[in-house]
Image 1 (tube, rainbow, N blue to C red):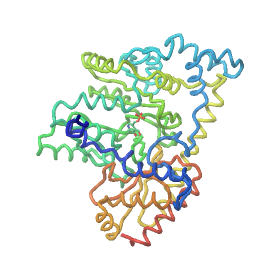
Image 2: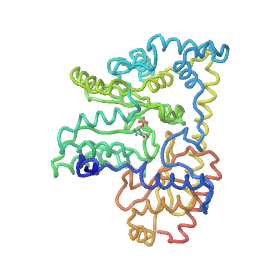
Image 3: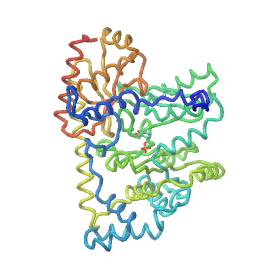
Image 4: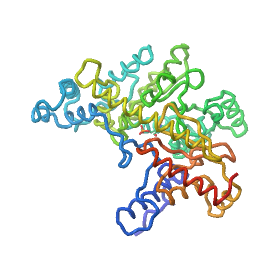
Length: 461
Ligand SMILES: Cc1ncc(COP(=O)(O)O)c(C=O)c1O
């Protein structure tokens, strides 16, 4: 009998790289197990997962929105409304009943494109946001934004010369999925010195470069608010492909969607915009809900996408209901409104204050500079590393910023992701950390002590 071995599998799969769940995350889990089992001599008493935007993860404590969970509870078990009279606000009971009438049991498959009623809610949400019409027929509900992104990349890669323009630094889903489907990433560099904005010249430069190797550009990825650095596009440069609820400084940085720009300009450019319930105040990553909307896409392509999503039968119903709660929150005057408002405001306030404090304190450290993020869960500080640190990292077979992050994890229990996993300019080093950890003073204090110790040991750049 022969074991299943790697040589029997698609070789492309071995080229996939995804730092967010890589070596550091695995080591952090090992430390967590050691702490749980007691007998350890680690220099910290908890592991803090700042490596992934997972707001409700144990230890990070972003609370779920009560309204979302109440609707989820009643759609899971409709009898609960009668068993617990007076517990659920009247608007929640009515909302759940309305969804149940449309969906039936959430244990049944739905329409492959997503429950039509929920797609209508999404279309209304987009119309209110952009002031342009949106059709439920152009909306596909998905298991997180990720499922839609993978599908689209799969469709666009027609042969190994197909390429997709990817902002650098990027969230590695895009390059990992491209690797899987044997496509090419075409990196275009964002400009850190102007707050990670997109300079059209960097896109032109990337396109000029691929002329030499015969790559065919098929699409351009824009991430807004940005990942891993948290930039919010201002409507003048890069438009927007993700959604506004992440933005905790919405007055200073109002959200402009790419869809709005395409419609305002009456542009024929084909666009696919993704959104999900995973981040921001919703923070329901594990529920796996999201959607994408097609703009300027032909009827035939839409039918093909429908055929492809039908192969997967339907997106999870719990995620679809989560999308409905996100796009249709309680309205002013409804019983759930006051609580919903205070909970969402509290999350925005906590994120805004933590990001600010963290960026300010990081900027005060020698050899560290950090663009403040108005709009996401992340910061992406730049670190200058000495020749000695780079040399030691190389001896250990690590990227210098991965070495820095590993030392940080070993000494503080804080798990961050090295910038090399997201892409960065040659010779520069960064790391990405989330702003989700409570107790910002203690947290930043640990980062500061670690950095100063690192500089003392390896010298400054
Ligand atoms: C830019 C970007 N795209 C896609 C995703 C995937 O998110 P999800 O599939 O949970 O919606 C993430 C998650 O962090 C992201 O930052």
